[in-house]
Structures are given as structure tokens and as C-alpha cells.
Image (cartoon, rainbow, N blue to C red; front, side):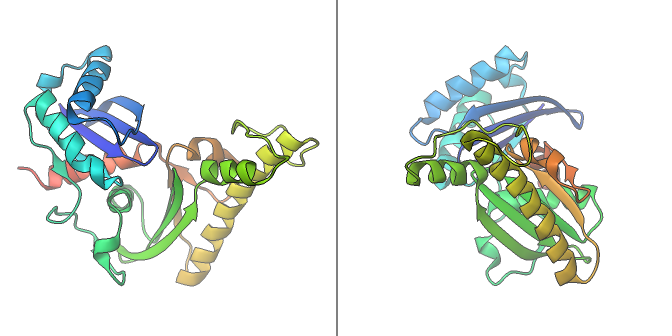
Length: 255
């Protein structure tokens, strides 16, 4: 059994693989204050609750956008499984041709998304990942990573709006009742959901225009589960894209 771990700013997602099949997925809150011992106890309990014995894990890999947790969770996995996990970063073979001003600046999550998307879809590609931030990655027809965008995340934007506008409440993000809202909460929900979907549709169109050819659009991330069905650009929603990319990288870097 192989364990893949995606450490995000808000949530950490884990996936257990058996024979190239993703058999278990887990999601937990990312806490920068937890120790390796605490993460070992928490993750071990979650795995056992799903019927997976940690000592049966033969290897693993993690990706983190939270630098201080990279070592903490790697140490936690060593305590829990007795194995040394790979980390996405310098020295790991990805096979990705990064054509940015400073390739070392490309986030580990974007590398993993790109590796997975290239393995599953035909380039040119535009990849959206909706989490704490919404990111857009562009891969040209030759499979080279060209760059993209970093956009304030949907939840972050809505919370900032509520915090800075005295008469706007904090809202639950869910399916809007209608496109044109008839009360404050409906207006905010419609603006958040339809606004995000229309932004993605527009970015796909502009990326295709920039590259001079149609693109394959792929979407992932926790908040994309809400947004993707409101898009009209033939978006491929791929819930486990990050976990699949991590598994590909694990196999690429192990015998």
C-alpha cells in the first residue's frame, strides 16, 4: 500500500493506493501547530478507522505548500509507518519541462497537478485548482509548463467581503437559488458561484486565444466541487488529480 499526501493551506488530503487503485481518501484540517507525534496519532487513527493498517504502508510521497509542515509530516509518517517518505521538491524527478523565469519558484502543488494532467489529457492544457487560492496553470502543445495565474481563493474572497463590508453577513457557500439574487444572501451566493464559473470560462477562452489553438481545461481542488457544474466550457472535473499526480511521481522515483 502506497500513501500519498497533499498538504494544503486549509486542508490536507491523503490517498491510499493498492495495485494502482485509489482505495481510500481522507481529508483533514491543516494545523501548523501540531507536532509530528500529534500528526502520527491523528493520521494513524483515520487510516485504521477506514480499515487500513499503517504498518502495511510500504512507501509514500507528500507535497506541501506549507513549508513548516513538510518535515513535521514526513517525521510523522516515519513514526507511523517506519518508512521514509519522498517529498516533492528539489531532487525529485518530475519529467516536467518548466519554461518560467525561475522554475524553482513553481509550487509543489502546481507541479503535481501538471504531471497528472499531462498523463491523462492531451495538451495544450489549462489547469485550475480551487483551494485557499485559485491557481491556473498553462501547458503548451509540446507539454511545456508556460506559467499561469494565482487568484484570491473563493472562500477567502467571500470572507474578506463580509469582513470589510459592514452590512454583508458571513455566508455558507452553496448552490445559489437563482442567477439574479433577490436578497442579500442570495446575491452574495450567486455572485460567488456564478462569478467564479464565469471567470473560469473567460480565462479558458483567453488562454486559447493566447496560445492560438483550443485548450483542454481540467479542474480540481476542494471548492471546484461546487463551481464546475456552473461552467460552460467543457471543463474536465478531476477530484483526485493531486493524489494521482503524487502516485505517478512516486512510481517515477522508486524502483
